[in-house]
Length: 254
Length: 304
Image 1 (tube, chains in turn brown, orange):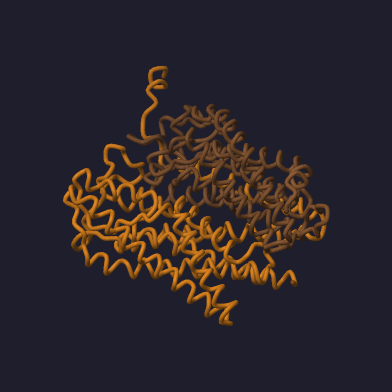
Image 2: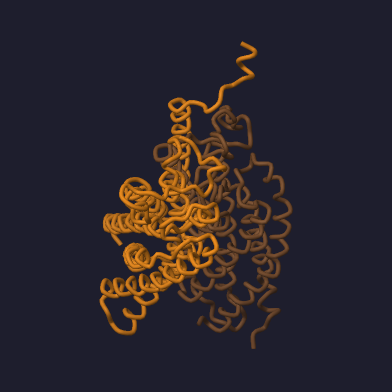
């Protein structure tokens, strides 16, 4: 019989870390400049795909990087950094190629329709928006905002991954602790983290409703609602995840 | 493993990822999956009946994630329980995934076109017969390449994730990258070539896709021909960059050596990201100067 109290008590800190991770993921999605289907027709500013899919793509790149680093070095800072940087690299590589296609394949310049002047470059925006569109491409402000989103999302995902790995490798009384390289543990933790990432990137999409340009978009101001919702959703998720992964450690793997 | 051999393996992984990205985008162009599909779906409702393959099984990331998972699960079963050689098993796995994808494609187009019967949209059976093998061929290439990326990462570069899980993850990422990059070339340019070049699509023109080709009616393979010149290869470059750069920074500064190396690898990643950001800004500046504004600044004219 698994001792639930003995399982949860030493992992309170990691449950809090998972909740913080979920909230960070939720906030990060607001930063990522997504234009949804209209952006694929150069009809809206941002990256031309759905909010959740892009955030998940970036977050997963972060989880892959964090997982690889966690296997080599269990320093919290390094693992979190790897998650953040992994997600940023994925977004940067995607955005630069999208800019090539907008600039040279479609013949439009990156421009925002939500602000008159780009807050970073101070370039005039409204004159460069083609008729009947809500902007197109990925201007500097959207690029920087997306990178910040990637960083936060990757940090959140890596934090959840790190916390669950710590839960799985903890030396519970009367149990031989699992190794950090244990394939079953890594698989279960990675799958949990991905599911956790999807849940927390779906919640903010109700705020975003299709398109958001980044931190300069008026919709960005709605982030506290999603952050609170994700915070609350992450509490039961964190407890269930800790019980599931901790139980795996109790029974010594699959 | 020797750093030099690791780099060689990584180069192979990067090449496989580039092929995966390109074939993923071209697969979605033939079948018009992903975001640009919204216009193909909308066209008959606006009175523009067309002869373009219309399948959107799911969002590209999910669809590719499924494909790669099916393929790598098949391959792993063959390797572990039937003792197949990995290369042979990966090919058979990709073949299984292509067949599953083909069956989903047929049900998707049948369902989608049948639901538009009220808009007089026909179901072209010859279109299904000619396009589905092409879609399956690209699905095979994508799955096989993603499997190669994942298999090499797990076996040669000692990535801790299980092979099937890693395939699933890279499948989602390749779909995400392809949907965000190459599909813009199809959606914003190829589908609306009758609109002036150098503009975003005017919302009033939504659904008015090009339906005539150089000879006869335009179909998905015509779109594939166009997108294979720029959108497809660029998607390959993008996914190749994601896989290569993300792994390269860990290989150059191996975090296993010390915490400082771990931080150096993160800093190297940040440096790459900064360079790409500056490049994006440079293209923004260049295109603004070359293409010029769409409207005149009336406020400044009055003051002048």
